Amino acid sequence: MKKSERRVAIALVGVAIWLGGLYAAIHGLVYDKTTEFRYGALAIFIGVAIAVFALNLISIRRSPQKKRNGTL
Image 1 (tube, rainbow, N blue to C red):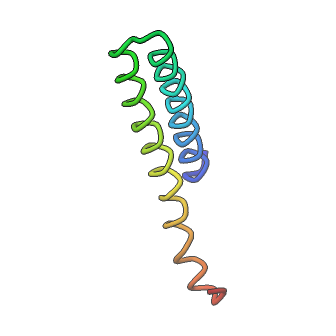
Image 2 (cartoon, one colour):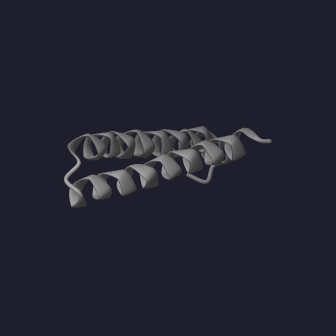
């Protein structure tokens, strides 16, 4: 597995955590469960952070290659 494929897989895990957190947060709001809402909001934050961090590493890694080839 290449490094970029691994980072995409990590970003996919982050998106799955984000979706689970979104479900928990909405469920907590609808049924007035404060702790479930808070854990859902925390999972949203963690999932988005993982996805952005993983995908941002891909763009940082590829940008010096473009500069060397003279495309930028």
